[in-house]
Picture 1 (cartoon, one colour):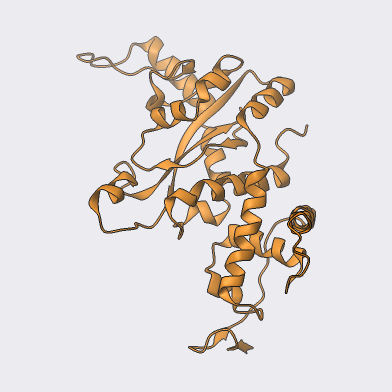
Picture 2 (cartoon, one colour; picture 1 turned 90 degrees about the horizontal axis):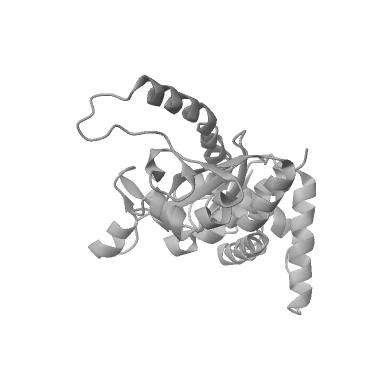
Length: 276
């Protein structure tokens, strides 16, 4: 089956696909979108709030282009873009705060949290060298934004920070997100060697200049620390289960924070990390 009503160019091959997200999450988002429409006095839409919620979740899960998402439906690409941006704004507005994460973690009886950083890739905008290099990560050798994640001891994603330029190192990004002030005073904070020197963070030991090897005690301590810290990589994987932060963002890097916060809200709705 084909549909050429959207684009006068090559015809679109339309197919059905699934998105592994609960109907309860879709209905919750649809209620929030409908309430926003009512508050704004905008009562008429070509498609209802349930369609808009489904569209937003599908975009964040699959990262299809707006044209690809618009092809099966009798709406323009610009309308599809507006629907998705409104849905993302509603999700990002309800993202959990780090202070609430720490409060709930203490209530759950956890002794420490894990912090790690990940690169969300973006396309390069502009021709000037300076803005492009600002978002270029030398570690990953690509353009992107640095996002800090805070996870439970078992690696469950709890919180994600605002996006910073990809050239920002992890310890600087953690300081700008004020993670030490909000976490380390109440709970332990485990991190890798990239956070060496971060206030309140427990990291591994690094060989000193001129030292050939770590002492047996230091090596044993590093091994125990690595076993406790390594589940934090699972949190990054949970963030990138949503394809938008896993593949190249087609928006400007300044809009990446809303995408990350929207994904975080959906993750909490689906996983319920603080539910026993």
